[in-house]
Length: 298
Length: 267
Image (cartoon, rainbow over all chains, first blue to last red; front, side):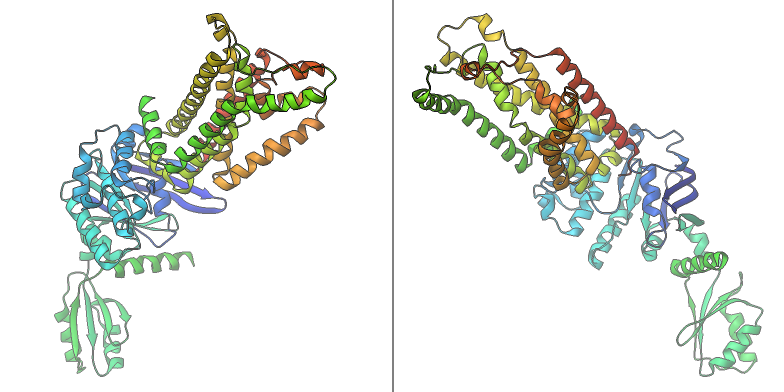
């Protein structure tokens, strides 16, 4: 899927601002961004629920039609079904729209573990069950691309873990998945690629590994924090220093490891009580990206 | 087409409100059709006692007059069907299922078409219901039935179908415009019973007949009865082609406007 300079205005507000994204086959994409950054609007546009102000997009290299949407399984925001109908009846409507047989319904219900409640009305479902049914609905018709928008929104930790495992399980089948979320941890655990949005603009697009593997973070603490800071500020190995409550978090220049910084601290006669490697999380990067973009705009 | 109708039918068939309202409609019409003649005749006999000239007993159920009588009376209750339509279109907005339908693979036109087909089906079912009751009452009340008598006035039955369809189209149009059930039902009543009547009296003579709901209501005129003849009133006993054309024009206009509204709206 290729999105080209997509823009959506709501009055003065630009919900999506000249956004260009390319989604390639077989990868799992995380679309990250704070609430209101344009994730759902962008997905709504490519699914034809929302009209774009300008720009274009293509699915499978073709201009979008309803036939193409049948090759995509999608849930946007909250799970949407007819509340007075059972899970099976609701899925039958999905199958009718996608013009596929009902044969698949028992199978997808089994995948999301709803077989026992398949004849209960949708409105009697818990939020977790509703989310799972939405995933089942997205799987109907063997789609080539799955789009999940905030699939774990409002769930308890157990529910989140269930959905996450479900998505991983589906991902193993080689489908292309687009997962929009404001939960960084979720994207880090599930996705291969990430696109970061803010105020409708793209801040970053690339592989999660590349993003995380580019440098090393080291936690350092000791009795004399001022002295440590002085050394770190002068050190040629350090590219960035963050001050936490009780420790410094130091980003090293590429290609270095923690022994270099440890050595220079010892040489200066500064005692340290704690030094340890920290795996860089998406959260750090995300906050950094957002901070950078704020710096630019302010 | 069949697929769209199947989808739409599944949506309503599992809904209790739908069946309750449709049952209510059938019950009301059935009761009135089977009961109205005796009620009117009792009133007439009452009136006849005081009247200077003898009042003859009226027969509502003779072929071929029955068709105009039944379709005219039934016209008053089409508002129930309009409410059914409003509930079903606005539900799609409040549940947000319209958006999911589009995402899943319907085009906006498909969505509208499925609603139009459903309205056609409801109109056809209601017309068939009236036709069957008409046959039963006609056969039991007409002394000598001939084939031509039975079918000579069937234009009223077809016109009734058009009346229902056009009226429900208007309801659908309001529903798509406002997206909220309570508001739409309120608007329909307000427009039907107050606003349009007000405009009608404000317009120059004759113009008011071209208002949308007025023109739909004009399709089938008040049947002439012996009572009315006494007062020298004479209503139209046929369906005017002009009225039919006006209603067709409105129907196409409503469909076009709905299509435009859906195309432009974000769901």
